[in-house]
Image (cartoon, rainbow, N blue to C red; front, side, top):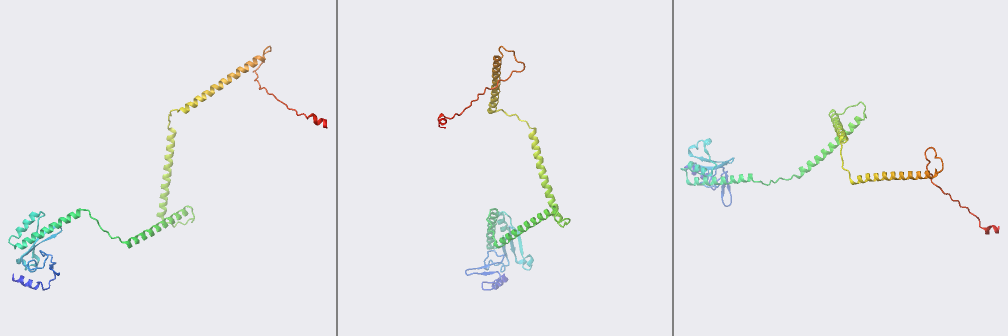
Length: 294
């Protein structure tokens, strides 16, 4: 223990320590094995040969213990014990491992374990809860990407236009027997033409099938009142024309009978009566006064 006092005298309040962080009110310790985070004689892990602390690694809590018997072996200086996930069982394990240790270290280890358990619970809740993520907007990068997209689009349109024009000239035999065009572009154009012709042929087949179906189909439609009235009008017209013909025949027979009284009947078909026409003439005469004057 005498060596612990010597170490603390070298690393005391007024001496230099690389883990010490001084403030206006209090001094803090940045050593990862510190139990309380304060820079004092009872909490310093360097000035205490018998020391214990609790640390968290990847969501699990471990109890670290240091004894004076392993001070000569820095590789095995700290003994690590995995604590249970259950809070009550973990406290019991701390009591069992630190049964003969000072009460201050045992109490501070339990207190530190409680704090670590609480912030682990908060971390799990925050990870399960939906949170807003703030993403910085990089205006320069966005503008640069937009310019590149526009240029790429213009270049693609230009390439397509050039390709179409060259293919049209190739179809029209503008260059004669010169065929320096890329083969894949020509094959692509041929495939497009085949696809268009197939689509047109399919459409024509569908139209022909529809026409055939329309021709083969027969439907019976119920007659409407207008159609019935038309038929009735036609019947009336036919009956009226027949009656008129019968009347004309009777009149002709009567005329022929009156003319043929006392005469021999004429041979051959009866002549049809012609309509009687009256013609009137008007004569203009000069007045007598004019004749006398002359």
